Length: 86
Image (cartoon, rainbow, N blue to C red):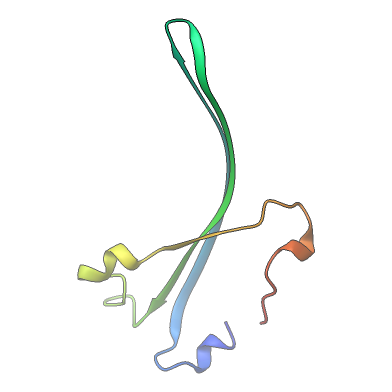
């Protein structure tokens, strides 16, 4: 946040939310399994707001761009995460 506070315009709000999803899809036809797919995903949703609470970059036609989603590594190692400087 300290690095971003020097930007013009500076953000007034930053949020992020990590998500982990395990999913299994099984498809069958006439009693026989034809597909068995396992998925494991980790993502992070990031929102950075610039402007002020009354009118910022998430209002109007920009509402669709209010949240950016990025993939995260599946490894359970702290050093697998991208480094962040603060």
